[in-house]
Length: 348
Image (cartoon, rainbow, N blue to C red):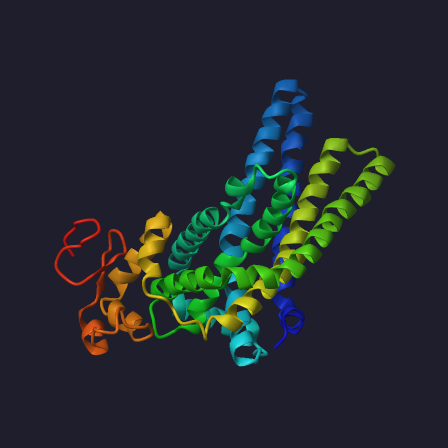
């Protein structure tokens, strides 16, 4: 199923995201009215600035509650349905109900999803910082720094959705724990990052254009309305900003999410995971090390499950013996055979 088809067939989630954005704006407006109504009664310049601070803090709290909690779960449901659509070619009619069941069965509670999402996001960001060292190596070449800056802008936009791709893999790899499949998802991304970025280049260019329009149009419309009704300019700017963010989060971010997940989920099932990357990524990313450590804690037979998908360490080592004996150090991620890790010296 093509990304475009998945996007339009899962518009229910897009509208729900837009609804959360609209509700944030509405509640922020109500809070604004209450505070500045009080300010009008007191007619005090000092209270005016206190009202501004209270309004910004209240708007932040409203946004955090609606989008960082409810919005997170809506995004998780959208990711689950996208993963199912790409891997099976089917989208259920009762998308919300199926998504709720998939998220609940996979993560048990929302707190588990939050923890895994933060670990995956942190690991991806840390690994991306390693992958983007080209500027440091080639920055002295005349004119190249500008080109690299443009490329890094594309990379930054595209990679902003990789953590959702890795979480999407958890809905596909259901035989493993959520932590284990999320860690595998990061490995798969790391092995295919060049291919994924190449596929995302065209989409990212489109997203940049529509993001510009999403920011420009609300400012033009709200600015014209404020001028006609003699609204305060700074109120118009803040209103336009909130509308632009809500539209971007609902339409543009969802479009990019579908495009990136479609590319990712097409290569993920066929990717042969390289076992030694676990140790390497643990050294490169503390967040991945934490994620991998939790995977080991939750799944005692992690090594046997991992080695069943991987190539032998060496041709001279029997595959069955390797599967039974191989273990990974929870401290550094290195492959170990004895009671102590030869890399960091910790007892296993």
